Length: 189
Image 1: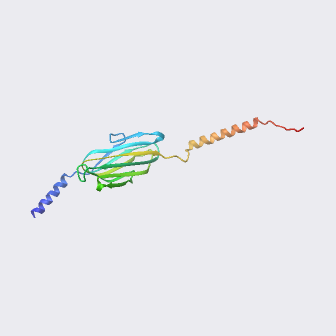
Image 2 (image 1 turned 30 degrees about the vertical axis):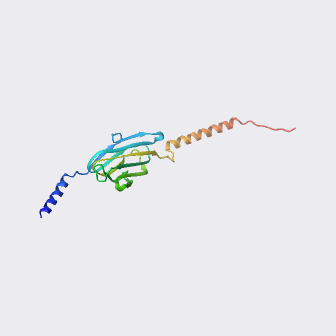
Image 3 (image 1 turned 180 degrees about the vertical axis):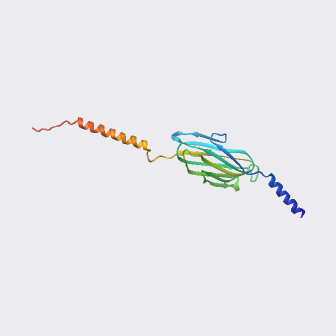
């Protein structure tokens, strides 16, 4: 009976001091999330978190881009020993709600999540969400890349300019044809 009471009290005490789940938002430009523009509208970014306490966490990295396109990226963590204070376990990684592939090696000492060609919508808040459990001093890091999608259909203003341009070229050819109405006659002796 005493053993049951002690076990129950220990469980209640552990539950009372256990950290609650925590959520953190990191907008692009914060120390935890940087981005660098590249050629032709491409963008590369780095993100991560370190010195994470004990508990279950959700970190959300947010960004808005000026063009539609596709994003790809990876996030990884490693530990020297399973269940040590530096051990961090991913529970899921999502980019705009799309679940990234999660791979664990060496029993979970090394974990990597990756996604490729995820649609990124222009002028909307896009998100990368990392859900994980940390044992006291966990860390993770990753990188993202973005490439704008090629626009196959011109916008209405571009159509108007093309039609106007074709009209001007047609008018110029027709005017040149009228001015050069010179008859050439060939006679044989």
